[in-house]
Length: 191
Image 1 (cartoon, rainbow, N blue to C red):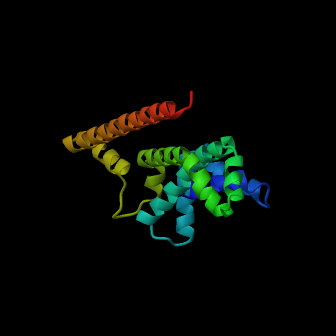
Image 2 (cartoon, rainbow, N blue to C red; image 1 turned 60 degrees about the horizontal axis):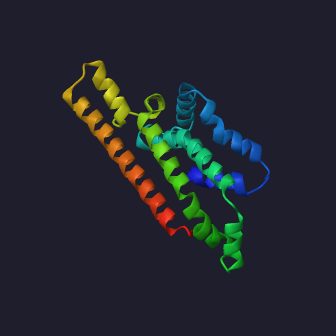
Image 3 (cartoon, rainbow, N blue to C red; image 1 turned 45 degrees about the vertical axis):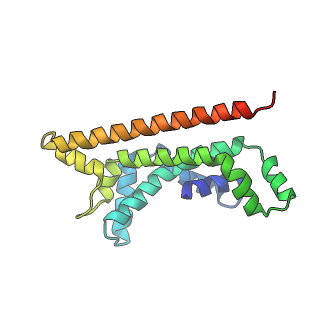
């Protein structure tokens, strides 16, 4: 959600004061090593006396993944024809309604792709989670890593098999949905 809004701000707001700083801070996690990001967030949480746990991991993963979502959505917004949104405003929609009714359906695949990318990166992250998690809270990658150090157990194999099966099912469903959508578009196209 934050990555989508950041992408809209960067692609639609034009030049505003602090744009360079905003985009620099937004894209910094793309090029910064995860160890540096994790350590920086740990120092931030210590400085503000935040108890490390679930919410610190959420903030850390949001910081890490927001830039990837913004890149995906911003690229789709740049490729989008603004005249569709302008036509909706000419027909009586407010700018917000025109964006929601005309633009959001067109950028929905980019939003979904950004969400899936963010989910995969968050699920995969071990380094930042190890810096920001606290006692009593753990993430799946940390749990798997700590279990594997002591030897591979059947539970770890089962978890990994379930994750692979879920990803496979999602890929097959997405592929079938894309194929169905293309077929419907080809059938609806005038000859």
